[in-house]
Length: 160
Image (tube, rainbow, N blue to C red; front, side):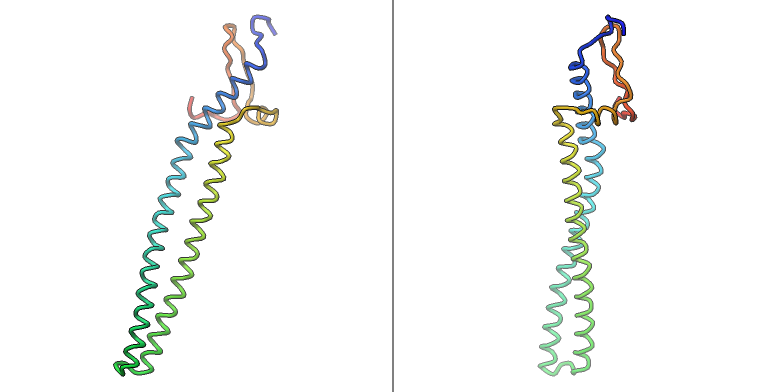
């Protein structure tokens, strides 16, 4: 190594940290944020579906009560009451199961998003860099004659 190209290791590490933090922040603020936005939009639509299901469940409960009242008043006979009640109960079961499935989906999405976002935030807050990170992310580091540091990553940086 030529002495005019020599530079302190701490300066290289600091430069690498700064660049990795910048890349992670840009990714967090743009691409991944947009993906989370799509999941959030999907969750909003799912929540809207859940709200409609809850309204329908209330309607079914009201209809069953009304059927019972009509049966007691003699407006409908026993056979019609039993048949319509069964239909409403089956619809209620199907809607309840779909609602529970959608609630689990929203819960899973929220958990995955928060875990992933937290990992990116840890990268942004990275204070020390270990050899594992260096070997996995950086192909080579060049120091130019005017002491500029050029980092060649193992991945294509879409922000350069």
